Image 1 (cartoon, rainbow, N blue to C red):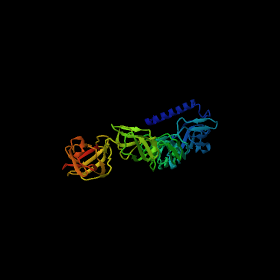
Image 2 (image 1 turned 90 degrees about the vertical axis):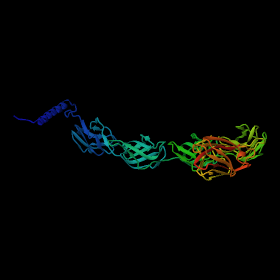
Image 3 (image 1 turned 90 degrees about the horizontal axis):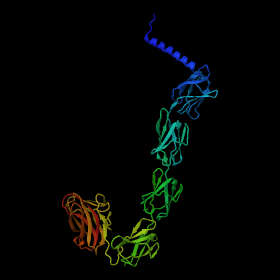
Image 4 (image 1 turned 30 degrees about the horizontal axis):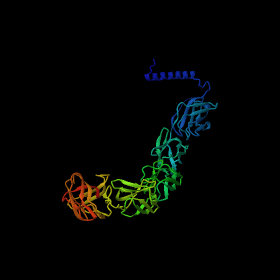
Length: 519
């Protein structure tokens, strides 16, 4: 008796079953060698690299005349096969092959298409790249396996998936209108897909202004900006104007003509491309405004003519006077008007104060440098601080602490006040105002708002004129609204020096001064 081991018996059983299965397959296969038709059973490896050898297994494969891979010029003729027999073809994967199905072309004109796609493992490399380009222009990238690139990302995630042209060694891509300067990121597919960032930076061309004319310019008129690549400008920003100008009189690569907005003030002009990147002019654009050099007579009677002299007075559209009961009174019809002289009838019901000129095609106004006196009217208040210090003379640092003329910590009106910080020791004067020379005949009181925080509550300060101590006040918590008779401060008829002196012997503390004026 012959005894077989279990493993040998299992192997023989599998062999017999395999022969039976093969015989059954050949019996029912219309593409068996007996009918003479070519058939492909398998090919691989399906995850190959360029230059690898692929094996095509089947029957009657000697009828294959060429193999067409996906990709440009990815065709291997019969003569290029490494070997060919009835049941096996061995062929190299062409360099231009891309992911996709493979087609075996037969001598009788028929074709066999693989049921699965061939996936290629490649590694894209970059040799060179265009260094600078305008939006809308082409960037040329050279290297290897660039035909595998399926997307290019410009700086700030600007994605491009459609190319001007593409080959194994060259990729041409159009620069998006909103692209920004930066490296490019190329994504390539295949079994080894990855993102590849360029070592070089693509510099995206921006519009650049070289000159502006006329300068100064009048509001509501055309400004001509000359420069390079100005056809790329999408927005123009003027100093003092919130919204950008997006509609232009004319535009070319070398010249941009734009209307100057009504609220434009002196300053730089900013050009913005579609990308949002801005370039700024190197010089300021100035605007033409009227100036006042004289007013006659001064003081003047109401209902009589006032002659204003100056420059660009032909741009004046209105003259506003201080109203006797508050507000203002405006005159828009003049007796006469030239660039150097404006004659206007003074309306009734006005008070002494600065006059204000409105400007044609502009939201800006111009105030007279001096006060216009009205015969019989009380003098206008002398505002020394309201959001900013209006003192006509010098500002000294003093001693015993520090000052901030534009603090935003506390404000009685507006957003700013004068912050005065005293150090211990007493008698410090961190803020000294001198050389003001304000005549105060006809004035009665000094009004001032002083804020005392926790450190300043209960402290005392002295408000003095002309380097002489004047009125001492003790501060309560919060805002102290003071209206001090001038006679309690000084008997002087002119104020040329003003200070707030620390009258507390010890302790550091801080006060805030706002709404300071003489009335």
